[in-house]
Structure formats: C-alpha cells, structure tokens
Image (cartoon, rainbow, N blue to C red; front, side):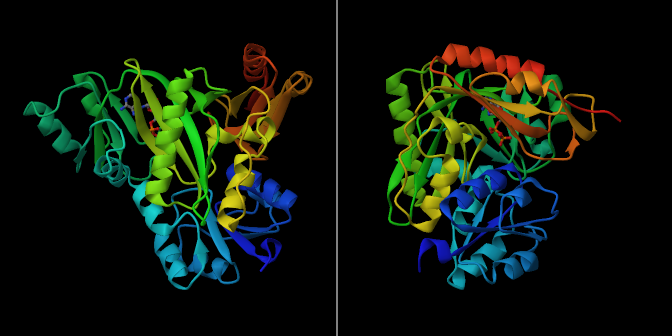
Length: 383
Ligand code: ADP
C-alpha cells in the first residue's frame, strides 16, 4: 500500500491537529480528525472532521473503523479503545501502553527511575491528607512540588508548596511529590522514531514560561546552553525514545539545574508547543516528522536553517468572548514574523489563540521582534 492510500485518523482537533493537517496536505496524505466540535482548529486543515469525543470508547471505535493508522494530538484519550484497535491489527501510534504510562506522572517517574534515566527524586501520595500528615511527621519538608498524577496540563495540576501556608491549597488527588528544583533553564528536545527503529532529534530549544499562566511564553532556537549540555540532552531524550520503542514524536522537557545537572521533567508523545518554530526554522517540521514516523517513512533532516523565537499568543486577561486581534497589522509588517492564528472564535484569559515565529539571522534581533509582537498584538473581546 502506498503512503497516500492510507487513511490516518487523529484523535484531537486543536491547533496541533491543525498544523499536522497542514503537513499532511502538503505530503498528499489523507488525514481525518475526531473531536467534539466542527468549529475546532483542525477542521480547517483535515480531509474530514467527525464530531465525537476522544474520551468515548464507542466514538473512537466507530471513527477508527475505516482508518489504517491512528494517532493523537492530546494524551487524554480513551486508551481502552486504542488497545482494542491495536489488537484488531490497526497501527496505533504512539502505542497505547505508552500513552497509559505517560498520562500518569507517577508511572512516568517510575519508568525513568527503573532505567536510571535521571529525573528528580519523588514519592507517590494518595491525597492532601497524607501530604499534611507526612509534613506533621517530619517525613516531608517544604519546599516541594505537588503534581496531580493524571489530567494535568499547561501547569494545571502543578502546585508549588514554598511555605507551610501553601499546604492549604494542596490538590486533593493522587500525586507525585518532588523536591523544588533550583532551575537555571528549561529546555526541550523533540525526538522522532519510526517503526523501523530509526531515530532523529531536533536541536535543543530553550523555553521560558509565563509567570502566571504557567505556559511556555517564549521559545528560543538555537538553545543558548553550552554544546556539551545540548549533546547530553539529546542523548538522554534519545535513550528515552529507544527504551520506550515509541513510534512517532516524543517531546522531552528537561530542567538544567543551577548545578549544571540535567533532569528529565516530563515527556509528551506527540507534536509539542516547543516545536512550533520548526515549521519555518528547520528543514523538516515536527508535524511532517510525526507523519513520516507513524507512516514508516524515512525521517526528515531536522537541522535548523535559521535562528527563531516562538511566542505563544494568549488571550488577554480580563476578556472572554468573540476574539478580536488588535494591532495585528504592525505585527504582520514585522519582517521575519510568521503569525499563526488558530481560528478559535472565543478568547479567554491566557487561552492559546495562536503563536508567532520570528526568524532572523541574529537571535537577539529575533528576540526583540518577538517581544514587540507579544506586547503589541492584543487578543480581546469587544463584548
Ligand atoms: P505540566 O504537565 O502542567 O506542563 P510540568 O511538570 O511541566 O507540568 O510543570 C510545569 C512547570 O512547573 C514546569 O515547567 C516548571 O517551570 C515548574 N516545575 C515543575 N516541577 C518542578 C520542580 N520539581 N521544581 C521546580 N519547578 C518545577
């Protein structure tokens, strides 16, 4: 069967699905999407959009019936359906057992620990009461970080306990407890692996987080950490992909500590926010690479063609309603700025409404332009 005859089904119709669809269309691949509402971003770029929930077993089974390859743009999907589809002989990438493990931050941490892949120490707890008891008993001391084992994303589900008073706001769920790491820089590596076992990584990027929204605000490529650390980060990311035998992309987020130690924070088995810039700044984009990997094609060249800064375009605080993009012309007039709007009709505070990638031969100039775009483009509602 030729690549172009296969039907690819994607669970999730957000912006990652939209950009995946743009690559699929370029490559002549047939991509179809399942998500709850036809107004979602990916509807604009796929061959067909089926309305239904990717959390619903029956909806996934019906959607997948005529597809050859199933993939995801979000982890929080019903994996019972994916296991059954795999048993039926469908190609399901990333593999369902990996999704089960990655979705649970506790299992993810155990995976690293069992293989001596460096991550911060951790303990698993059942609820808020147990955490408080451990603090009272002296088994646990502040500061520490509480992470919900499941259902957290974009910083939701992460609670930093710096002082005893922060214990009041503990999440009352099964959690991972980690030491508060003295982070110098947060970096990411996206690795791709195809079914033949070929592996290829994108160059390391630096991430900077929004102070209140806990989302990636800026991304810098190339990374400014020293070459040796970058090589180590790529090696570490590739070891995880090899150990998992994952097919598709694996985005690996790492902390570089003030003591120059690299620690794995977490992974995502899909295209990732830290790879948006690859559309304009690398020979192959992460979206094309994911499709190449899941279709069993040769992997593409990941080299950076020019420095880039990516900035997420978030809904302004205080506005909920139909989205308006103020001052967009000044941003479009900025040379090297590629403005991506996801086509979400409603803006909400800190909602990811789009991103801009600014390419420039000089990274510092790209940073200046990205700051201009971020400060100038206001996403608000008028009602
Ligand atoms: P999410 O799945 O919501 O992205 P993360 O585990 O990546 O959650 O945590 C979100 C952010 O919280 C990280 O990018 C980092 O800035 C901060 N953080 C997470 N764990 C720690 C830690 N152990 N020490 C210090 N900061 C942390």
